[in-house]
Amino acid sequence: MLRSLRLLLVLAAILFAATSAQAAEPLVVQVIVPLCSNDQIDCGSNAAGDPDRLDTNLYWGAAFGHRRYFDRKKSGFSRVDVMGAEGARLERVVYRRNVSAEPFGGKSGETLEQIVVLDAYHGDSIDRAVEAFWRLATRGGRIRFHDGGKERDVRISVAGYAGHNRLMDGVRLSPPPGPEERGRAVPSFVLACDSEPYFGPALRAAGSETWLMTRSLMAPEGYVLDAVVTAIGEHAPPTIIRDRAVAAYAKWQKLSRRAAGTIFAKPR
Image (cartoon, rainbow, N blue to C red; front, side, top):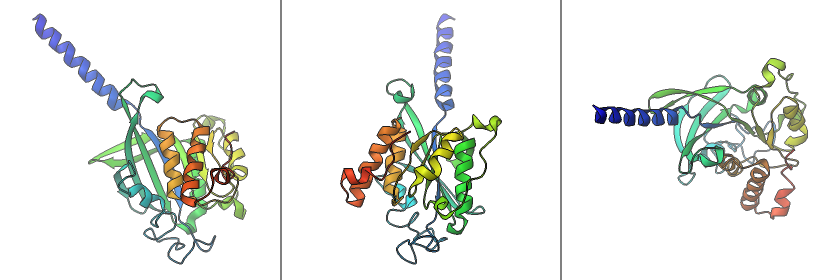
């Protein structure tokens, strides 16, 4: 009888541990990517600047496009789900990797799931992409996707934007959320030309802590985003996130670290 009771207690402990591990919320980074459009900026070629060509667009399927960069074999991420068009969003791709849970308060040896969601928006719908990012950063949100045949519903931890800075064209952000929604804001980053003066103050005023902004013209390509989300997965502070972005940009753009450092704003 005593032996049976001990066995039941052991099994209960194992079940509790497994349930706790499954219940741990993943670290979810959702990034809004409006496709490059030659009607807005010079994307380099007709194919790279076709605003609805996922396979050739500069910011999606081209050599350093976001999906193509995360799809590479040595990315460290595995692709979980791909969803087709829904309105202005042409494609959604979900990636996953496991990171150490220790920097996030877990025990040594434990892992935490990091999920990266890339949303490709039609280039002609860039205003809707900006609005989607703004709402996500200032109000938070949840996302559903399929994982191994099961539907999952997870909370967004960090909001990102990677593409043309539409605010430089005169587009304005919608009014900030009211007091009842302000507490839902999540940290954010914007990989776009001169994003700090255009996005930074508004995001911070709405309650979103800005982890990376820029202060010059830049190419918001996949290697920069990879550096940013990898640092986030290590629970790195904004200063280190910036350092990683600078290093990646210097490497792939063949710049000095000093020159690359002038592109990314210091955290505020």
